[in-house]
Amino acid sequence: MTSTALTLFNSLTRQPEPFVPVHPGEARVYSCGPTVYNYPHIGNMRAYVFADVLGRVLTWKGYRLTHVINITDVGHLTDDADQGEDKMEKMAAARSQSIWDIAEHYTQAYWQDVAALNIRQPAQWTIATDYIDRMIAFAERIAPRHCYELDSGLYFDVSTVADYGRLARAHTDEGEGRIEAVEGKRNAADFAIWRKTPAGETRQMEWESPWGRGAPGWHLECSVMSGEVLGFPFDIHTGGIDHREIHHPNEIAQNQAFCDCGGLGEAANSGARIWMHNNFLVERSGKMSKSSGEFLRLQLLIDRGYHPLAYRMLCLQAHYRSELEFSWDGLGAALVRLKRLLTAARNVVDAAADGAALADAQAAVTHPKLTPLLEKFDAALSDDLNTPVALTVLEEAVAVKKVDAAQKGALVAAMLSALGLPLAEREALRIRPIAAQIGEDEIEAALTRRKAARADKDFALSDALRDELAAKGVEVMDGDPLGWEWKLG
Image 1 (cartoon, rainbow, N blue to C red):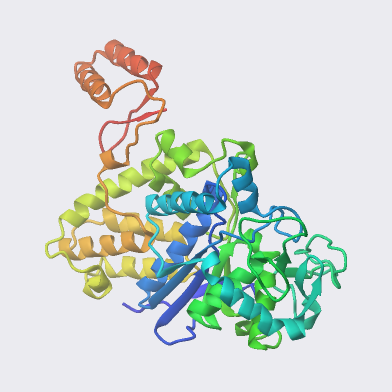
Image 2: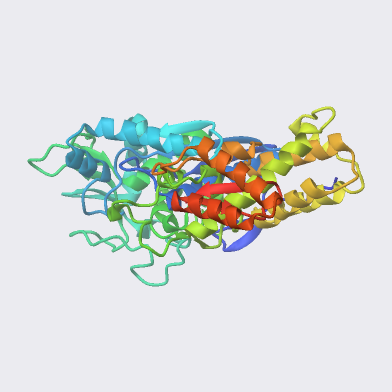
């Protein structure tokens, strides 16, 4: 197979670019992780499905991957700016709990969602509070040329670096990524490197520094952790599109200052050669906001009877740079598609004669019906992670007839791995809604009676049994080509 060159869309240059690693044969990736003050909503989790797909594609292309995701447990303010409360401190006060307990609880909850969505573990989780000394050292290095001190903290002067705001495409003095006004700032876009604890106050998380007792600014954390673990410049920095306007331009400015780099005409001066951003998940009912109470988190989907992999499938069906609209009907359709794909794939992979290793799958495929599918799949992934096309090619590979069973099994298994879809029996993808008042044995018994009634052409009894199940919250999906299917609605 002739492998297609990997091309990725660089948010910094606003154009697709060939992936050329900083270190030959390696791929070093940093992803902005969660602020662990609350449960992540499903829109947050789209960023990690996207980052996982990126990592899997880099593995598919043969690179040795080092992927780092951070955990922000200090420093992120409620308005992403330089005023307001620290999100962690605010939640700890609201819950009357230790801020450290809050961080631990919501970190574990986030990791549970990561596992449920079949997101691979990164090479390293970096915890912000483990890097405080290095953050202070970083700030000390850049402060003489790039920072100034106010009563409220140490601020970065954005006029001291070239091309500030290019990532956000700011065209005004304030820019798209404008930071809220703080008295004494030289420029509207200047941002906090270190925030002093106000006189007379004590925070649960605060440290001594050359600028007084306080805590690091949110933007400082990612510059320090990415540079410490991956080294500047590294290959790819990912995050949600909301980070493109404030957080990432500020990271870039810090990186330029630390590395004593020039303008952003040279992308590597930003700290990373490629910046990638997934678009928003759009939900019309307003339940994407954590202030809404019962916001859309992964556990809510599970409580309603949807396997979490249905959400992964929903994400794969849209390109990561496109807005993705969430609806329950759309999630249900994604679940049905997933069940049909994985049931058929299970039969294909089980039929493989020699169980070829996934790493050898591409080389093992030589059948004239299979090599074009492998090339189409590789081309889709190489075209800026075009997962919607890759999914359709996977389904073609599952359905192709009269080919070598071992090669087909190895190819399908490798394609599933590249998309992060684990083999599973359809029954394993069925989840009982938390509010269901009927047992699965009772459902299956009623469906068996209904099958017999339809075989006897007793459609009145068949309809009566369907209506009886519907009254108990069970939707019978007639016409499923893979067998009788149902879901609790």
